[in-house]
Structures are given as structure tokens and as C-alpha cells.
Length: 238
Image (cartoon, rainbow, N blue to C red):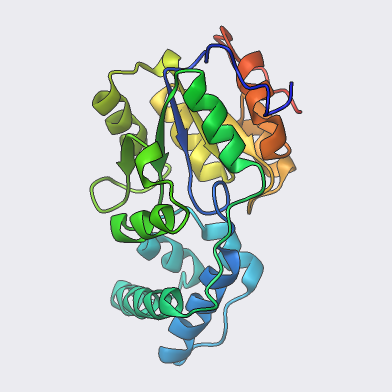
């Protein structure tokens, strides 16, 4: 099934997306801001792959994983420097945070099929809204869950709150994300977990956590259709 055909009726009342690495490719800006933050703290530049691997966690938790020997006060200082650096980057005219190709087709297809859409992200609410407004998508999502109001991933709280806000139950809900933190959150919340392998964790790492694995946005609607009615975890790759 192509994304242009879409779903006639969605098997999920609520479909929740991660943001960075799933909706948008923000890795270059995230790595650049983290480099600035480390430099301000007098630290060596972090490994870019390590930075990508902690995307999705709450910022202080991500930095704690990058700096496991540092004290919590230094984690907070680096986090504050990162926020400043990212805000400055976002104001630049050459700032890039593109949607992954095909994501708009997925959003349109799910909307036509009757799904409510949400986002659950480690970003701040201000950062998430800035991203969605940049791409004209703010009004497409009825529930926005961030670390401003919830514990970070992989705690289930963001998904549980999204379900409360929309009246969906776990069997009616799917989480789409590119990291193990997204998929573990889904498992803890009792929802379907769909791995997006175009993001920042690879397919081999995601597979054990996923009910299904999508290789590109162009396959997502087919994945969602095939998951209809599935009550147990049977990983499939598309």
C-alpha cells in the first residue's frame, strides 16, 4: 500500500510520534549545540554518535549519560548552556531541521483514516512548538507531551497522559519512535511500539523492543494496517 492510498479506517484511535529522529532530522543542530555546551564547560567535544544515541532522553539525563563521572551540578550547567546554544542556532537564517521525506503523507493518511495524532518528546514544550510551527504542523496534533510536564522517557507517563487527554486506551494506541527509549515507553504504557529505523538508533538495536519495524515513512501506513488487531508482540519488518 502506498502512502497516497492511505488507510480507509485506522486501527488506532491515537497515534503518537516521537519528534527528533522520527518527524524531523535535527541531529546536526543537536550535535552542534552540544559541542558549544561542552566547550563552554571546558570539556572536550563529545562523540557525535554518542550524542545521537541519547537523543530522546530528557536533556539532563542525556548529558548525565554523556558525562557519567561529572556531578549533577555540572550536568545542569551543561544543560543550560545547551539550551542557550540551541536557541541561538534556531534563530539563524540557515537553521535546518527538515521533516523526513514522506512524513507529511503519513500524517495526512492517518488523519483521513480517523486517527488522533500526538507527539511525545524529550524536547521542551517551547522547542516542540517551534519545530511544529516551522513546518506548519502545530494544528495536526491534538496532544503534545514533553518533559516540561512529565518524567522523561522511557517512563510511560507521556503516553499515559496522551491517552487520558484523548480518551484512547492502550489497545487503541500506537507509539512511533526511532529510539529504544520510545519503544520501551510504549511497552511500559501497554501500547503498540513501532520502530522508525530512519532515525538515530539502528534496526538491530530497535528490533527486540518493537511490535513492528518500519524502514521508511513510506511504509508506515502499511505497518499500521498490518498491526490491526494484533494483541501480542510479533516483530515484523517492512
